[in-house]
Structure formats: C-alpha cells, structure tokens
Image (tube, rainbow over all chains, first blue to last red; front, top):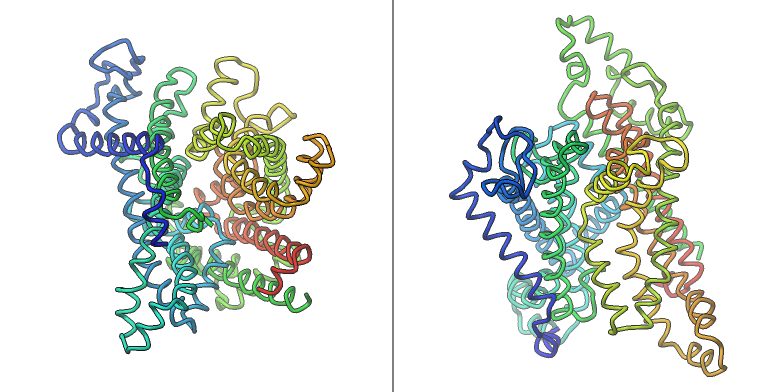
Length: 281
Length: 306
C-alpha cells in the first residue's frame, strides 16, 4: 500500500469538481446555520408559493408557508451533513476496533463479526430502520444510531481483511518477535496501514448515508418533519407537486450535488490511495 | 461440494434465526404492544388490555410466541393483523406486486447496462467510457425517491402521458420500474465494465479475434458468456438493496406492495403485519444469496476451497 501512495496521486478534474461541491456546500450550510437561520424558518403567509426567478428577495421562490426556498434548502443541509458525518464517524470507530481485534486475534470476536456481517447482509438498512422506528420513533439521534449499528460491520470487514494479510508481513512478524505488545502492534503498526482504504470507504459511506437519511425522512421514518431537512422538504413538496414544482425540485438538486461531490472525491481517493479497488468490495 | 453446500446452508439457517429473532425482540422491546395499540382508543380498561393480549397471544411466553411465528412462516399461517385480516392474505396480495416491480426493474437494468458496460470497456479511457462513467456517477448520487418524483412531474403532470401513481395496467409500472431500473443501472454499468475488462484480456478472446470473428460475436458471444457467472453473482447480491429501494419507491408511486404494507403497518402500529413483512423479505434475501453462493460454487471450483 505504501508504494501506491507515491505513484499515482494526481489532482484530476473529478477531484476539483468534488472538492468545490463539498467545500462550497459545507461552507454555505455552516454560514447559514450560524448567521441566517432566522430567514430560513421565517413564515410569511402573504408570500405563499411564490414561483422562482420572479422576485429577487426570494430567487428560488417560497414554500406553502411563504418561507424562502433558497435559504431553507441551504439551512436544511445541516441535517444531511450532521447525519452523514456523525454516522460514519461512529461506524469507523467501532468498526476499526472490532476489525483490528477480529483480524489479529481471530477467535470469538472474529466469529461474532463475521456472523454479524451475514445478518447485516440479509437485513437491508431500510427494513431495519422501519422496524426500529415503529418502536422507538424517528429522530435525528435514532437515525444516526441506526446507521452506525447497520454499518460498523462494513468497516470491521474491510479492516479485518487487510489485517489478515498484513499480520503475515515481515514488519509485523518482526515486531512480534522482538516482543512488542499487541495493542502497540495494532494501533501503531497496523492502523497506519489501513488509513487509506478506511478513508475511501468513509467518503463513499457519507454519500450513501445522506441518501439513506433523506429517503427515510421522506417516507416519514427518519428525522422529525418539523426540523428543516432535504428529505422532509421533499415530503412536504409532494402535496404541491401539481401547483408548485419548485418546492420539490430544489431540495433534490441539493441532495444530488452534495452526494455527487462526495462520490467524486471518494472515487478520486480510491484511485489514488487504493488502486486495487479493495475498499469498495 | 456437499460440505460447501452444508456450510452455506448452516450459515443461512443461522441468519434466518438471527434476523427473525431481532425483529421479534425489537417489536416487543418497548413493553406491551397491547397498551400501544389501545392508545388513542379513549378509556381502556384492564379487561380490554387482557382481551387484546389474549387475542394476540401476547400472554404466552416470548419463546412460545417466537416459535409459533417461525412455524407460521413455514406453514404460511401468519396470524391475524390488528385490524382483523389474516396476515397471509395481505402478504399474498402485496408480495407479487413487489416481486413484479423488482423483476421488471432488474430486467430493465440488465438490458441497459450490458451494452453500455461493454461499450465502456471496449472504449476504455476514450470519450464513450468517460461519458458513461459520468452518467453512472450521477446515477449513483441520485436519491431514488426524488428521481421518481421528477418522473411524475415530467411525464404525469407536465406531459400528461402516464398516470402519476397507483397500480393497474402496464402503464402504471413504467415509471416505478424505470426509476429503480435507472438507479440499478448506475451500479451495474460499472460492474459490467469491470467484468468485461478482465475477460477481454484473456487469451481466448485474442484467439477469437485472430480467427477473424466479427467484433460483436467476440463481445456478445464469447466474452459476455464468460462474464455471465460474475455478473449473475453481482446481480444476485444486489437483491437486498433492490428490495430496500423498492420499498421506498412504492411509497412514491403508491404501489401496493410490501413496502406500502410495511409503512402502513408502522403508522398503525400493526405489529403482526410488520413482523411478517420484514421476516419474509429478509428470508427471500437470505435464500437468493444462498442460491447465488451455491451456484457460484458449482460453476467456479476455486470458491469452494475458500
């Protein structure tokens, strides 16, 4: 993996487009959340369902409650970014720890991880989410927890696979031979070699989780509909599809651009860090 | 081979137990479904609750209920929904609708992605490959439910060509199947391209070309046949994701399948229905994965050794 690092790392068009999209959207969302949250939620019933491109104060029009669609779309990005990054961060921490232990020591942990992986393959996230939401209710926190529960095993499998081959390599064998303790081998010697593939999978999973969260919220089993979110805006817009297309179009474009940016970065990272494509298997 | 099949079957049985147990436990996790069910019904006496528990069999030990449910899965008697319908009857109506949508979407996607993937592989690095790659990346980034909504906006509302939602003649399946099919195609094109690239490097392809066979015969007869094993495996492993996507798409188009049944069950806290829907869908996914595994083991001896 070390040689792949140096050989093929170049900035391609997909890197630039992906970076501009992700950085631009993130900055816009943060700025709006910090300074303009008021204008994203302000109700103005006098200006209901204003079409886009007709009024410069509301360039993308207004929704059924007279709220500005542009500000609301940017503000709602908060939820997608929080869910995307928080869920992957949680899954990475749990997955990497279990993957390291399971690949290095094998034994009972390994069996547990692999059987959990089988179960996870058979129970698609959407079905799992429906079941749990029926019981514990949908919320931002529950959506993040569900995503972590259903995805940590992907990271565990990835890390486990890499550790299985790395543990036979000379540098690990010799570390063990001179009596380096297991935790040090795991976290100082093995972990740095896994950073590349884990980052690739993380980027692609942030993208995927943003899609999943918006789907769940759209069908009413995700984030609370009173909080502005892209899936929630699209759910509200459905009622007005006949008369006010813009309410349903712009939040979707926002999801598309965000996820596309992350996928472009993920692809670029995979090509430059992991030319064998192992991270996506 | 026998050992391999036995091992995979044992795994599948374990997974089925685990999944059904998780679902059954989860549904009973927050305490008494009878109280939940009685919520909103006004004043509820302890007798009412007892009657509900009796009717649902909730007064029996958990394991008895669980095995009763497993038995039901095998015999087809899935109990009664909270609003009084036999669950098996509801499932019998919804499952074919979901499977039909899944099949049409999958066929759509296979028919579109094979020629596109082959084109991308043969033009590797040149403009057709790049264009296909960009479209596939955009497709991977599309929220499936939003694509469906945009189809409704374009073809039902603006152009008025197709019904916006519902389930009836062939015209109603076009939009949901195209939505799911296109989303699947974004992934499948990449898989076909990858599998083709690998195959095209083999020597027998060189021989076929050297014999002077036409390029179409080489690609579609010789190369594609050899990739077929890999592709069928990929498509089979997608089954879970396909069903997950369809559950959402059904909501957009008001398609009366398992997804709609599940969401309605969630809204009405109709646990027997929800439990049956989740268990049956998971069971089908386990079965498809098992069959793909075994088929692959038959076709490629290297897998068995693993």
